[in-house]
Image (cartoon, rainbow over all chains, first blue to last red; front, side, top):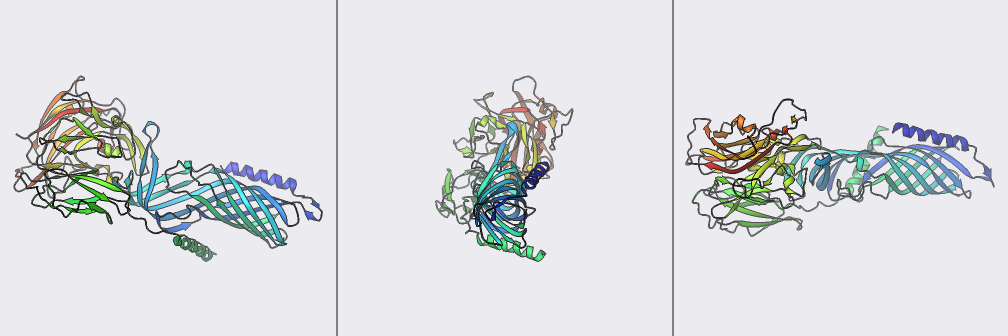
Length: 252
Length: 366
């Protein structure tokens, strides 16, 4: 996986090198290139929070970074279209108290594959970190010299998923609320293989330039496709990736 | 920098906490405890899914008894539990959960005569949501009782089949008396279950008592709660069986193969004195508990396998373990009958393919 990312970075770098002498016509630069790096804060979360989640004990973003390359084609001095490519790690850890949460885990292999299904009440710790290759398409607006705003959407391809956790200090009612009660001191789950291969959503960002080249950038990515497919039963509600990145951008 | 970071985190947690919805209404519709008055009851109630059986003293007047029932918080029960009921017949209660959506039906049985002969003719899916079957018995008045439970209930937690014949305990037409006998088979287990326990093999175990999965994942030996109240002292355990140890590798609980070890079956019965109405024996103490009065266990050479393909009769005397003198006036007792396709199956140990069939089992009391 690491090698895969390295290759992408090299390709991006090659593109930048070739195009870094953008042409200036009619008094404004037609092509603009930008690289940026930032830190993702957010959640892979249901919206709104379902009633099963009773209390959030802790939340932490973990290591979730973005490394991106943007190409902007300016149509006028104020308006343009931006696309590019980004490597996005979206992740977090959350510790919550849940009540009456239906879940279904695959247990065993081959002929002995079964499902452990039930309604869980207790503590749930989840750690997720999904690596995406992101292609944005953004309308770009530059009302002032120092500010650039973008609004549009993105398509993402999931390259590396981690969604795992631990259920503890509780019990499960096997099969549903009328089932046998089974104490769960500590059980693990891993839904990494179930994370959807694609994501898409809305994106909005802003750059505030401090020098000609250097800007502070902020970017909101709001996933509109649930991260698990509809036939997935591990989690009873739909979850979306909603992350805000803050970082530094450098205009090439 | 660190304090800014912490502030951001705190803000996020507070923000999310603000989004927490109202607590959902409870979907539980359980009878949590069930008691009959002490002058009537011989044991505490035994729960097998929606069947609650409670052993009562011989000759007790059951015509108008007020039980004491505790149900799930916020739930309602019908009929009114404070109304006297005639426990000479089955009594039905329906509990509706606080959410109004979920309901459970319970059938209460007061048992005044212990059944001592078991022919495994009647099998039922006691859990309405699962296919596995458990033998039920009919007493001389034609009342159905549920003295048996099995490891099917444990297996069903993580392996669900639509065909009851695929579960480790099932009926078989290879019977000697009547149409059916009880067959138990040691199967390959699912392996790692949610990082809690490793189940390399799953044996078929059938026993009088209750399979309580409450702590089954963490401590499987506690899940098998052995024993049903006894009204008489047993003398001999008799019946017919056939057993072939599995030809596959003998596997220990960690999944290691133990070379040269042959599987053997379990056929035994334990008669024990109880300190309280709720006392049961479990997998940790069924052969060793100091309260054991007498024990009938099939000798090892018979447990290793039966010759040929036909049923072989067994007649095992109960052997006293202590000097205890049985006295039903002063003490109360329980009796557990246990069959398993692998002797150490309750520890998830055995050989895949071991197969035990039992039929026409009797406890001789005189």
